[in-house]
Length: 262
Image 1 (cartoon, helix red, strand yellow):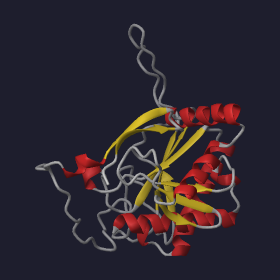
Image 2 (tube, one colour):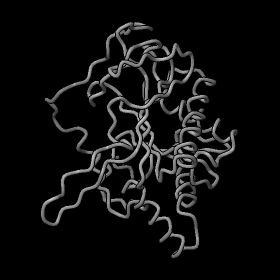
Image 3 (spheres, one colour):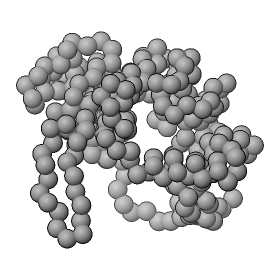
C-alpha cells in the first residue's frame, strides 16, 4: 500500500514527508557493490595491532577493544584561537577531545560480526568512555558514531568508531531535550515512554523487543533504515544504566545490525 503523507516528528517538532511511491522512480545513478575480501591482519594498516600511526605512535598489540586519541581530531583541547569573525558572524575555538575505538584486532571484521561477549565489551567501553569524559574530564556531551563503507568516505576499513567529547551539547540533542520537557509540561508524561507505547500498540515497525529494550523503525523516520534502539527504563546517560540493561542493549543492537548487513 502506498504511503504519501506528512508525519509529525515529536522529538524534533517538525513535519517529515513520507513518499513511498518515489522508491519506484527510474534510477540511472550509481550503485554500491560489495567490498572485496580483506585480510584479517594488514601490516600497513594504522589501526591494526602494532600498526604505526601518522603520529609515529605504535598501537598496542591489542586483543579486545582499543581506544586512542585521534591523530586528526575535529576537536582538541589545544585547538588554536580563531581569527575574529566578520560582521554579524561568531566563532570559537574547536575545543574538545576526539578518540578512536577499534572494536576488534580483526582487520576484516564488522561490528555486526562480533560475538555476543565481544559486542557487550564494546558497549561497556562506550559506557566507560562516556563516564570518564563527562565525569572526570568535565565535557558536556559525548557523541559516539560510526561511518560505514567507502561510499560515505570511510578512510580505513578496519572496524572502528569515533568518540567526540565537546563542551557543548549538539543542537539536535538540545532540540530533543527541549521537546521532552515541553511534552512533560503539557501532558505530564515521558515522551519516550509515549513513543514506545505507540510503537508497541502498532507493532508493524518493531524489529526486536526484550524485557529491557526496544528496537523499531519510528513512525516519523526521516531516512531509509532509520532505527531507534531505546531502553524501556529512564536513564539520561549510558553510565547510569545497570550492567544487565547495557548487555541487553548490546544484544539488541547486534541483532539489528545483522539485519541491516544482510
